[in-house]
Each structure stands twice: as C-alpha cells, then as structure tokens.
Image (cartoon, rainbow, N blue to C red; front, side, top):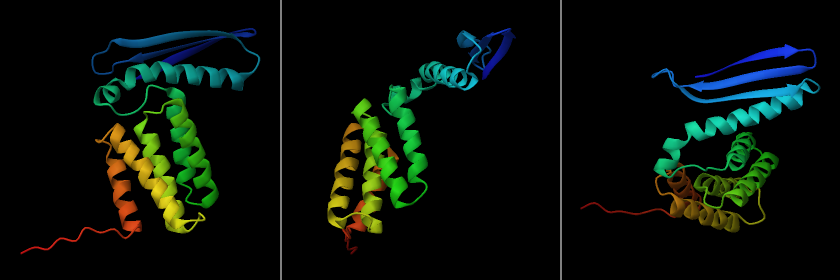
Length: 178
C-alpha cells in the first residue's frame, strides 16, 4: 500500500510517501520531498517519477527473479506509452508506438517485451497493408519476435505474436493423423 501526506508552509511544501507491506504491516520504502511551491505541475511530475523509481525497486523483484521485464524505468515507461499508441489501432499511432519501442530497446537491449512489441507493430503494418512491403514487414516482425524469444522464452506474448506472424505469412503446420 502506498500512502503519503502533504504539508505547506508559505512558499514551501513537504510531501512524504511510504510503501507498506499490507499483509505484514512493515515499511518497505519511504521518502520525504521538501521543495519550494512555485510550479505545482513540475513538482507533481518530479515526485511521481521518484515514487515510481522507489516503487520499481520493491515491485519488480519477482519479475527480475523470473527474468522478465527491465530494470530500466525509462525503458518500461516508453513501452507503456507505446502500448497506448498501438491500442489506438491506426497507422499513425502504430508508428508512434514502434518508435517508442525502439527507444526502449536502445535504453535496454535485453528488454524482451519491447522486442516482441516492436515486432507486433511490424506484423500489423504488414497485415493491414500499412507498409510498402507486406513480406518485408512480416520478416521484420518475425526477426524482432524471435529476438524476444531468445531473450526470454517464457514471455507468452512473443509466442502468440509468432503464431500470428505465421498465420499472416500463411505458413501452416499440416499434420495427418492415422
């Protein structure tokens, strides 16, 4: 549970935040912010980013133990912004999402989810005819998704994206049962 408080005195503000294990009742993390009260929005952004950084340390331990995710908060945030754009389901937003995934990969080249999501954008470009070459887009998609699987083969989204790429390429597995 995250809790906090705010105190103001003339042109100064103090904000306290703490993360508490709700089941065990002990503190996991706490921070105090003393600032001049001149730009409320900049102050809010600064504190939100610091709280996210503090929370990341505590909340992603199980992710890093399983080998999923990233330790780079900026890469993670770019991936979340990319998801927003991709979920708008149009050509321009898909391109914005793709750029954000590329930026996330530049920040953390081993971030498997960013690789598979980048591949996902190429797949949709090819599938929807938004690119100059359907074949090239699906090839890029497969390359990115295979990179993600190489980094972390437990990421279900990568395997699902690979299946969709094969479907788009009309590469089916034919099996005969005797």
